[in-house]
Image (cartoon, rainbow, N blue to C red; front, side, top):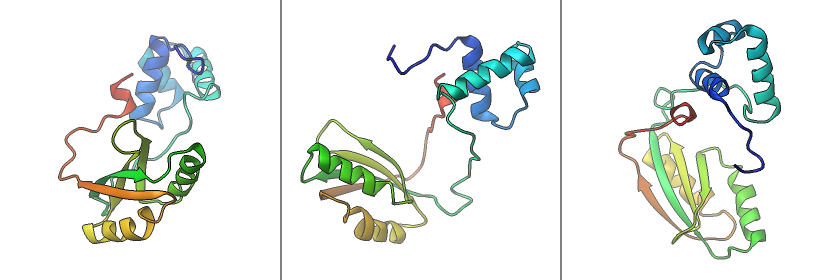
Length: 158
């Protein structure tokens, strides 16, 4: 176990599973679901929040209903992979709202991004005006998703 991890027992895992699918559940209902009384459930919830396991509560949106159903995965190669270059790229990429996820990769390219837009035309503009102008980018390769087959939530793995 890494030093920044905390031990989670079956009650903690049950809390996380319940909250991942129903973040607005009351503490009373949560306690009933996991089989504890309200006070220990509240204490566990507070510990999970204070330890950083629970980082916040958010509304989930349906991207298709919002007209954001075009997904591209983009491989990015950098000209320079020194730490200062990676830091500059990382800071700049955070400012592009269309980029949903960014991962530093060990492989034939440096970063893999998930980009969500309304259309191929909008993606083309984001690629040309935003992604390609990020610091130290030497090349990109785009893969357009035709259909999402499986998208796990953390509740699926806890």
